[in-house]
Length: 145
Image (tube, rainbow, N blue to C red; front, side, top):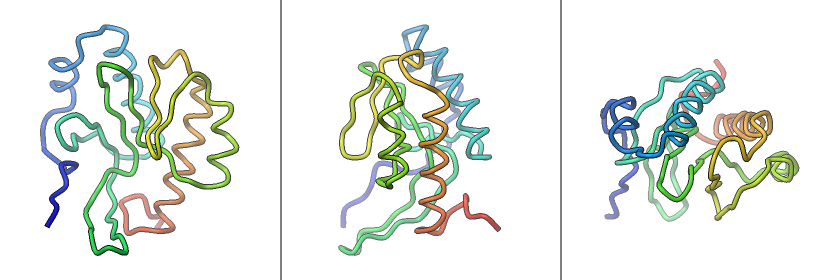
């Protein structure tokens, strides 16, 4: 059975940023993202895997039978770029993505060099849309009671 690397680790988030991130701008951006994502998700930051800072959690199960837990929102301050795990493939997300700013994207990750390259209100919209999507489709800490 495949074991996912993206699991809650219990590592201190602040210590991780201070020891892992060697670029002062990326460090400042990381602390700002923690404030924003904590506010948007109403969840404390926690380390998932070796480098992902996640907020909230949800359980997923694919048709293949593979299942696991993941953060509802997250980011990683990687050397090449800040990597965001905040995108859900919804019509609303597709619409607002065009106004995000300067970024690159893979199937589910958004890559940004620095926060000043993007529109933070659009990032908030993407995060809120993702929380909504996950809440509607998975068992999660974000579910509206």
